Image 1: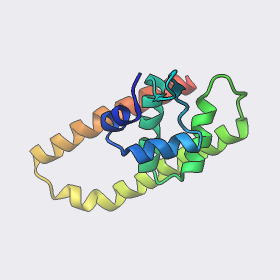
Image 2: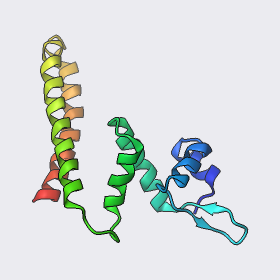
Image 3: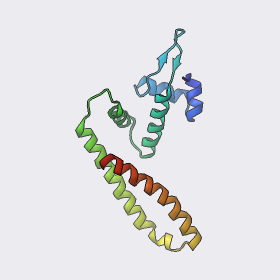
Image 4: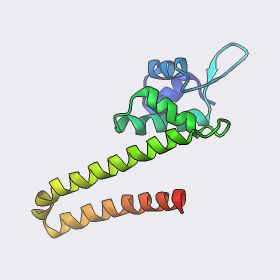
Length: 137
């Protein structure tokens, strides 16, 4: 368990951010007898998810909704899951278009530079493909 300052330092966010996420219900700390907030491993996972979704330019309310879907105690909202899958499909389409735009630039790279990028993208691509297969397989 971590106090607010400890989890903020660990996750490289401000104490104010942790406090705000607690206020809006993203994080639910336990309270000690002396009323200190203590954050567990679940809070670390949530903060990692928030940072991930923020990189996708997703608003906090939407992030909160998606994280809520992951809570196994709640009923599954199929409509929200479908919407989330549609957003993933849009992101994938956007990436496909980005690759088309980058193609002329990639053609100018030398063999070693291409290999380095291919290896880096291959690892990420394999991870993504494995995740998709687990989810839909």
